[in-house]
Amino acid sequence: MSKVWFITGASRGFGREWALAALERGDSVAATARNTDALSDFVAQFGDRVLPLRLDVTDRAACFEAINATVARFGRLDVVVNNAGYGQFGMVEELSEAEARAQIETNLFGALWVTQAALPHLRAQGSGHLIQVSSIGGISAFGGIGIYHASKWGLEGLSQALALEVAPLGIKVTLVEPGSYSTDWGDVSSRHAAPLPAYEGSRAAAAKVREARKASRGDPLATRAAILAVVDAAEPPLRIFFGDGPLVVATRDYEQRLATWRAWEAVSKAAQGAPKTGGA
Image (cartoon, rainbow, N blue to C red; front, top):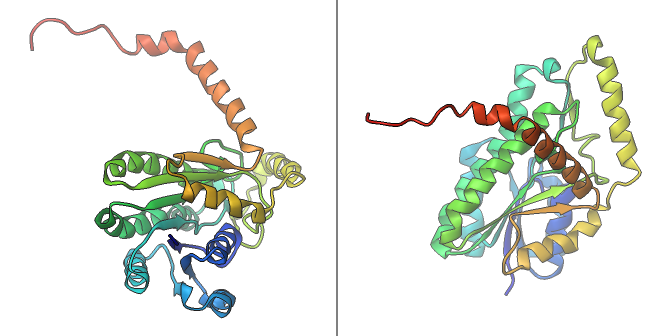
């Protein structure tokens, strides 16, 4: 049976590729974007199987309206993809309050609002699949994008807890964690804080790491088959990497964490204190 999708940030990047993957196989898609003009080719090609919706995910009320409009149009909701987001560049000290808040409002709260809007419908159906687009930056961290990491690490914790809460209701949750891809995430879609001279060395080191990753960037088109495999799985994963680079990063990072925790285990146990005995 065909599925009904709701995809945020559908005008570019992964959102656009996944909307096309769904539509080309006969599914229906509510495609959201800040500017729906970018979705006109979807409507021209796929007609009434596309519902273009103008949406700023930081507007909680608008998220509820968009989800309700999708259910009103298609009668149900099967796959909700929280893809809208961007990269905020800048050392932690360089970030303005407005830049920090905007990053969290979009990448974390935006996903939360859409999720909250969708859940009543998914609960009523007793089914549905929430796809939360995280990143290798949701489990590891690199210099120069600390607030981006904060937004994605937050999404990871939120979604893991969510998965436990909704599993008894028949609802699935998957965190998609892409590595480096040839999208405009680090280019025209990104934002940059005003630089401080003190961080020129750190900035150069971070840029060198990003430049090295460009040679192995993945093809967003290849993620179409991957996302369909995830949403069609009877038992989808809670987490899945997209790309062949993230597992190497994750393995190195988690091995280092375990080694540090073990090296400091004696101090950790001493912090427990002596067990309490006796009465109140």
